[in-house]
Amino acid sequence: MSALAKNEIATPKATPRPANVVHLAKQTPRRVDFKRIGATTLQNIAPPLVVLALILLVWQVLCSSPDASLPSPHRVWLEAYDLIAYPFFNYGSQDIGLGWRVLVSLQRVAYGFGMAAVVGVIIGAIIGQSVWAMRGLDPIFQVLRTVPPLAWLPLSLAAFQNAYPSAIFVIFITSIWPVIINTAVGVRNIPQDYRNVAQVLRLNQFEFFFKIMLPSAAPYIFTGLRIGVGLSWLAIVAAEMLTGGVGIGFFIWDAWNSSRLPDIIVALAYIGVVGFALDKLVAAAGKLVTRGA
Image 1: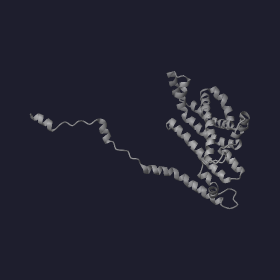
Image 2: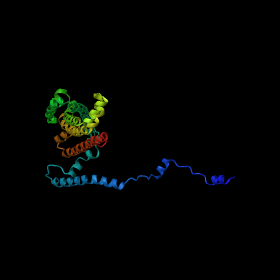
Image 3: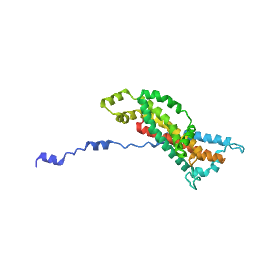
Image 4: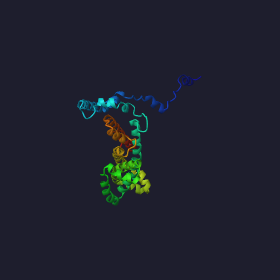
């Protein structure tokens, strides 16, 4: 055997490693910084909890006397414990927990606000595109949006002859105005370059609406939707006080007639938490659609 053959047998050539394997070998696993996440969470949660504790303390001090007109937090806890601890109990048609009542009210809000969102975006887009529509409709909308929600209730009851659709109409007519106005502003602020591109590509009205108009005006639209969903929640609570049913608004009115002030306070806490959750839900949807824009 020749010397060259011996060298080749003794020292074989190493097989080259694929580039992706080398890249993976050099990659270090990313560690989750739990300390930083915990510190950020604490910074967001601690201040509201401290403020809430101070409010409860001041409330307890001011309302702890026997002749106080409002119940103290301790009294609310004792007298409305079932409403706080068991939100989904069901002992009859009207003897149900506040969780069920909130769900009934949310169902009405979903119908009314859903229709307001669709109709408001379409009308707002038309107004934003047309100068004549803006001049003709904007003054009327500015007048109608200042009408309080309950002022629409007698007309809706006369028109529908039923409390359920009347409440939905009140939600619709209350929440549609901020959606229309903000959508119109967003459409008017679409950059001219986008419009020029649409003309070059020869997009029809539907393609321009879905591919250019909606993505560009989305931040304005979701601002209007956030305002609208808050107004929807306010409107349904006010409407249910007069139309009856099993919603959270009627529960507050019934508790007032029965002098159950602790129940009213618990219901107000439910309303506030649900309203806050609705606002955050629409805001999260807006960030998802606009990719944080």
